[in-house]
Length: 110
Image (cartoon, rainbow, N blue to C red; front, side, top):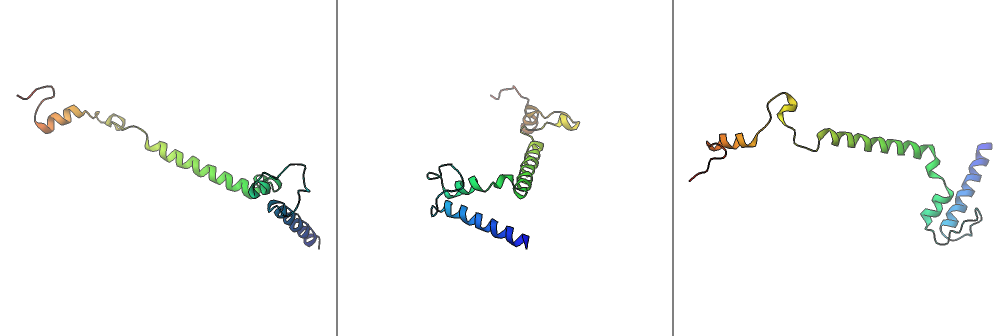
């Protein structure tokens, strides 16, 4: 019985907020001027969504997802890795080109 009463009070309060947001009812909940605010801004003003447990859980999950994505991106690196990192010799493009061409770097053809 108490729960039904409380739910009816919550429903009535949310109906009032919706009426204020739709500009159909005057703002009797606070002294704040809401004439220049959008319906969403008015709802955020009177319904503190960011204080709810559900919002905090969703926000925490979203932030963790962003953190994990940034860790994955950072693990890929931002530079080309050389073979020294993995215990081999470093990659030398000049030696590779000389080997492919059959020429030594620095020699001129002509």
